[in-house]
Image (cartoon, rainbow, N blue to C red; front, side):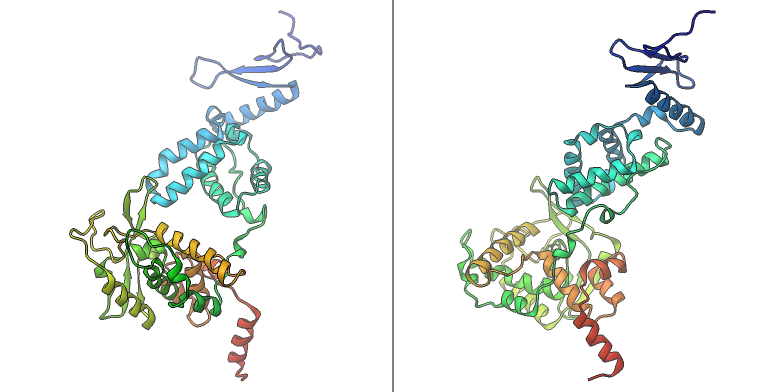
Length: 398
């Protein structure tokens, strides 16, 4: 019987173990049913044997250790190859952007079997310290967590390390989005204010401020998503019944291609009543709408309500650009404290205003939320003044 092999510290080496010339240790083993060897490496013998024990335990429990040596980057690639077809265009775009961010980090080259909960949390904390916004980091979590969950369900790893709330790790900045006050809304809706004549004219069209005035009224009065607004076709606006039928959204891809998709969720398909101001705004839009020689057809739909001067359907980027300019102009010439405005702020404002008078389930329907929790926790703000008024009404206090 030959002498036992030893390392440089005179410790006995087990079958499969060896020490390299650079001092590092290696272990070779075979998977059941395979003829070739696999190798793992470690700086110390203690570390190597911990990994050996993990391999043996994983093999006993049916864990696919070879796949567990997959990197985070490769896991995301595998996950997206399976699920990308079920995502809507904007979601897919956001996820691909998030994956590109992740792949720029050394974290992407780590083995998924080595990622612990503390590693996952530290990754997000580091991103926060790099001044990335909460929502940007949350999109990364939204792609990493299900990818690792898939690996867990496939017995590639024992536990999904991303199964935690991001808000428990880094502070959320969602509270910074506030609903517009009555004064701010009135200022925004003042059709005669100077800024509507100060916005540059493009393509020989009338004042851009006048173009978008009706959209602002409609979004403030319905809470629609801007993609839903621009997805409306002529038959979706029912003047007889005073209602709007929301059943699709219009988006434009990064390649400037138009695309019609169903709303964000099944709950997004809904019928919204029109207030008098919204009704009149739609009347004004129809009156100003100049039908093109040939109505543009997109994914089988034609007759879009909102058109550019060239007869093309409008998309969210147009209104967003207008509101960005509008915000800068108002701050410079009228109110330096005026808050940021966007189509989503208008939706947020509508929901916050309506929660004071509408039943929460009714408001959930109008907003097209898949869950009442979204209505309660994300879009509404309950101030002491709201509580006091509701309490006084319930108690009959004048």
